[in-house]
Length: 124
Image (cartoon, rainbow, N blue to C red):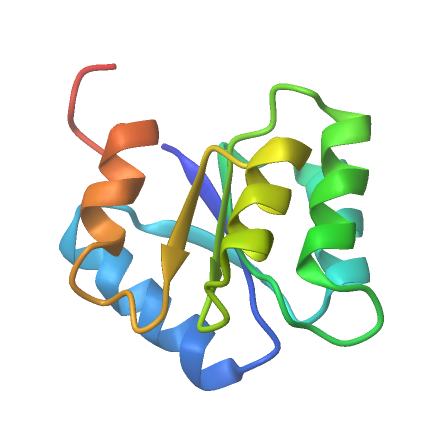
């Protein structure tokens, strides 16, 4: 079963993400409330995917992305934000993000995850 790390400082958004992912067949999720917790969790469990907000306390999502990619250059990270400036998107992609989803991303998040990771029960 695939494990997806949800990194967002909003408990509401983490719970909403879990509900969206369940609809697409992804059941195993772990959570991080800030960039440092995302880094620590990634290093300890090596999830199959990370969905991470760009704006978080302690360490920003972009800083956490850079650290995760230094640790594992093949990390499967999707960044998300309501601040979808071209600069943010390009920075995330340059740092190694596989994709960037703009909030509110409720309509296209499942499709974006499917593009980079197979859900439970589907062939890889």
